[in-house]
Image (cartoon, rainbow, N blue to C red; front, top):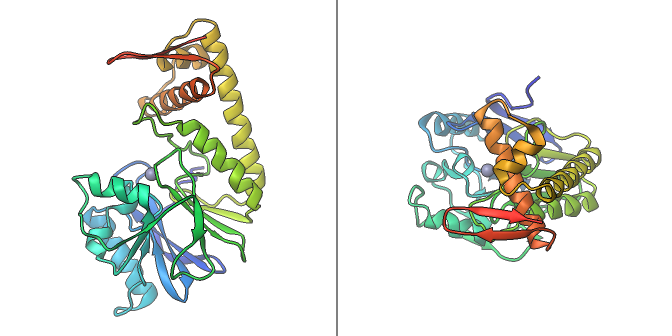
Length: 288
Ligand SMILES: [Zn+2]
């Protein structure tokens, strides 16, 4: 059974949090937005910029808040277009996001400039103007990716960082970024909080976070061990490591995700000095 969320209007998913799901042009084809209560309701993420997505979000907000009632503003989990593309159409009074996400958003020619951003700086803090909620920086999937945390109800909004039954795509765009390490760190950081529930940006909620986090951590450690072994036995590239570990992987989507994770794992091992990295213009390769 798929854990991907079906499109639908707002419904309560916790004592202080409601979720709606709107269509997205990109896999997995739908994306969640949340309303959290901090005095006035704040919207978390804005869906995609496609007509379908924008209309679904407007409809859901009108049904939930009434025709004249707007959310106080938007808190953006990260700058990917399935979460941020709806911002322009929504025209919010205020957008709260991490400075690293704002920088990327403003550098992207596909997204509008001049939105009323409030930039969060550092690695965690209270969300300005939204009592009861805190933010935590959790990278690996996207720079400036935020988790939203309500200590009172132990609810964590995880956006794309933690997905039920889907692999979180690790970022590989910057060869000098250790996205694998950042993702591992975020698992440890969140495990310490002991959340009661983790709500994802694309999938059903993670209802047993401690178990899920532990399993995910063990999967990644195993992944690192296999990667190290493959390099020791002569694999030089992410492609070769993937082939050595899994043989041929059916499906281009699954193969791309694995390749990404393997490249991120190789870079993490290189950052820790456990393998050596060699870079030319065309090729990034590794050796024991
Ligand atoms: Zn994303």
